[in-house]
Length: 85
Length: 270
Image 1: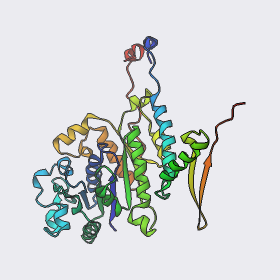
Image 2: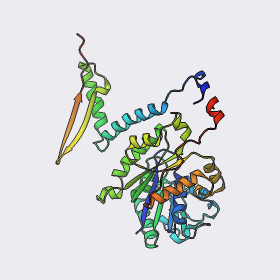
Image 3: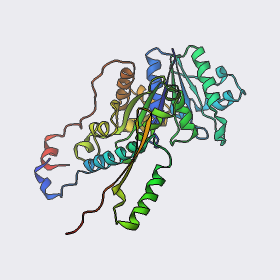
Image 4: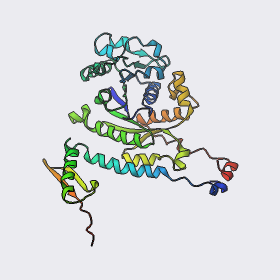
């Protein structure tokens, strides 16, 4: 780093941005991997139904298939928006 | 025992063929009997990188379809006695590769006493890529420190864990290795490019080797010489190290730091 560097605007650390974006998308894609093919469609249809009643964020609906000792459990979690007082 | 190693990536243009050529050559330099197969049906390129493009008479598909014997189609490398190239077909019919046909060729290579078979995968996740990885014992996933390449390679890691013969038979997982190519230490230091550690962290598997971005890679491909044979190339040395690690030897990582700047550059930047 030279003493004249203050004359230039410092570029953003874009490598960190890349790493964080990848961390999130890779984790999301891994969680869907190996699950039944209908999961993404099921998720979007459920989201449409929920939206009729509550205005939730698309990312608020999480679907997961858990395998536990021969049993498969479909786990659905919906985060409702905070109610304004 | 023959070990089958697939060189794959998902994304195109990251250096699969360059890597296949150098890893195969490096293993042959160490005295192993090696075949390197181009699975990119319709877009033959490994022959150019290996410098044997004018000696291709029969190809992989000819062998699978029984139009040529394996012995006739294997092209012996000019530089190494124990290295052989099997070129891809230029046919546009992607269905000419079959799972059974590929299996038969690999079986014949094993019968012939080959130590290693390197499968140079096409880009994408279609049939050619699937067949290139199907019989693999180990996988070299080539990745650039760039978002789309990293994401695609994670997709490939998922397929290696589920769509291979080892996965189907429950024979134990395909051993996965990352090979980071086009690495530019100066840009990593400037925060413009993800580091080795960043990529390892995101994908969760260790890096077998890091190949620095260098003009020697293009110069080598221009001449049809695998870059591992370029004596003065850092990229070539990095491939030599990767081959040693593939064979179970320990080698410290090199070429991860940017060259030190001189005094004037440090004061005035640049």
